[in-house]
Length: 439
Image (cartoon, rainbow, N blue to C red; front, side):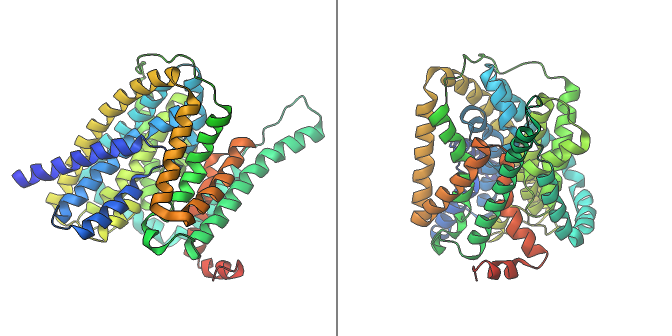
């Protein structure tokens, strides 16, 4: 009993750390986890392998719930939040930023509750899905890429001349296609000839994700940002139970799909599930994305703990499995309990931070906040990846600015993962890399 309580305490400490990490724009919990594993290799006597695994599980739960704060208040999303920027920004500009953060957070809490309720039958649900999907991974990923690209919709002024409308429509569409193509090319470089030193391989993708998703929004605020209107003091506004239930179930289904299929992120899973279930309003959309993100990150790691499933999905699961392979139902139920406890703690932190950030948004200059955040993530990138990482961040930021300044969806930046891994899955990755001169 004392050992189990100690393990749960380790997960709660990890959740507190994850909540703190989530407040730094562009800093991913995977990067900190990689650094923690390096420290553990030097001092293995500090924690047991099982305690470290539950500590990292708690950190992932805390980070995935609270990291909505930079998305809403600093326009600096991660890959899973990229599609939520526009509705969240709209709420912020109407003085309802805390409400947007709480809506996304409520979806996250709903997804965690769903994972806990599904935990007794998770093996029975995932095992047949895995058997069905695994042989078809290549064409499924290809179809998802096609869906993302075809999902771009031209935006043009209907009152303009036909030629002007055509140019305007293809400017928007071309920006989305260009973002995907360039980010995919960057992904090929990072997979086959990364300029980042081998010693920093555990954060190889960090500069790319900072540049594609966090830095462009911060630069936008730094140059064009204006002080948001006075924010409402309370983040609470009545949410219809049916909206919360539907949004949570939609996001949970998309997130679990993403956790089973390689490469597909929570943002893509939520987008696919939203289209499949015809989400019709912004509140429902934000709830769904919050649920999808958490179901993807936490669900993919929880699958590692299912006895006999041997399914390793997601960056955190791969890192933990390099030093520890969970076994037995006791460890699994401890992980489920840790998810429930850390999720409740993280949601309380989210509500408190949403209130604080709402007061801060109208009291401080957004340029100062964005500039400080940008300086911090740049310094962290330099410290963890050196000059090579800083170069990658600069290139990725240039690509990430295309949808910000010209048009297109930010989620197209996920070409950095989708392109190289899909090419590898269908068996042509090395040939394409050789054609590009990367081998």
